[in-house]
Length: 94
Length: 514
Image 1 (tube, rainbow over the protein chains, first blue to last red):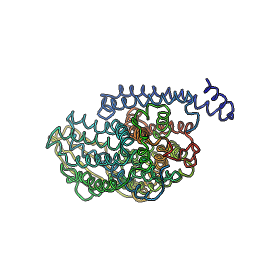
Image 2: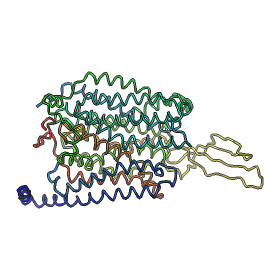
Image 3: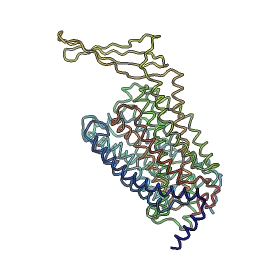
Image 4: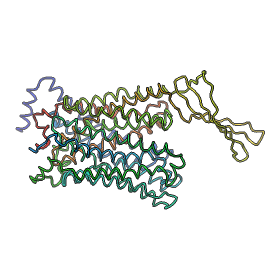
């Protein structure tokens, strides 16, 4: 509660431009959270559409399995990043 | 505060950079000799060998590199930087040398690709651990106000490793016939064997170096982390920095780095169809002329901050990739054949296919655009006289650029490598300054290898995917690096600060003040 009050008093002291910047950072958090599952959706649909339809690497299952397995935690990380942005973890520029 | 002065920094940089350069050299030669290695160890028509080949390509870059970053990062934060990046060097050099000793598939069957796959995975693991150690080691020796400049020397090694790998392969290839080079125990093995000499020298030099003063102080005070993985990724305060480093800087840096140096090379070879040796020559010139700019932008980042230099490099890539690659394609377009010089028939070969005769002719053409190129045509004359003879389409084999056009190509590739120097020059200093000493090796290694190995390494795969889906646009593959760099630019612009670390009131300039 005290923390929230401090944060509120700090944000109320900030210039309009500063407040706008903070709002944009928080709002963009939703975008990062949405992008993450969209990436995984495109990877899975890319795998379904391409596996077995030719002889290139994109037509083999192994690369897709590796890529989707490594990208799933990365997309999870992007969602957490978005969540942190919404929660104001990046309000102070790093 | 531990003593950090520039005394002896030259030795520190030399010992660290030489080892890292050799590690990159080792990693690159496998990729550059992929065709020959494939023929020797992963023969076509064998499903198991094909599967192992795919694993060697994808698992080494995508899975094992980040795992190596975690494994060696943890080790480096617990036992020290010096011995950890010594170990990665031994592993990398040893596995490279051993790849050069594995007999081909013809001699030992499936054991050959299995051994090569194992050694390639060890290479990926070692690479994952090397960079973070070298960058941390140099940064912890460097004074705060010049950390960008000193770590930029480490940043030159990824590009210089490519330069040395290209140079050694070309040197060997130019001194023997193709048959001698590609034979089972042929010249392609020499670059692998040379590695052991380079690694030996580098190990000798590194053994004589001391531990990083900042880490040594931490160790003396018994403040070393007992669980760097948990502290790096389990604590929100640090994990949010790892995420920011990845999505706001390294992910864009990875695609810019890969597109400028590797995608450009394969684009010139496979899409523009520049002849093998000239293609490498163009890249060597561009890399050689651009490399000093790693130091320029590293030093500049000490003066004006890291953020906008890196982000400007990304933005320039986003804006100029399509115009530059389009210009490369248009400049060597041979739809207009010169009328000034007549084509020269170089060879005419007749072979028999059943009872039909196949006439293969190779011709050299001149284009008004300042290049010449070779074409091949196969005509079939059927033994059955009732059949009309069949003329095949003319196939363009190779193009060779004359000097003015070659210079133009070098310039265009040079511009793209300048973008690389902008994003890559300051990134080591940027990463080491984000994390506290006791978990620095672990925390910076993972985002770096995900950014470069995964996001960067995916450029050719996604480019092929996009080209197969949207067949009309030959530049469609560029939308992946453009998209990733644009996303990273927005995240970096919003969430990163540009304060110069040496004057940071939060103490970001003092690596030991954690």
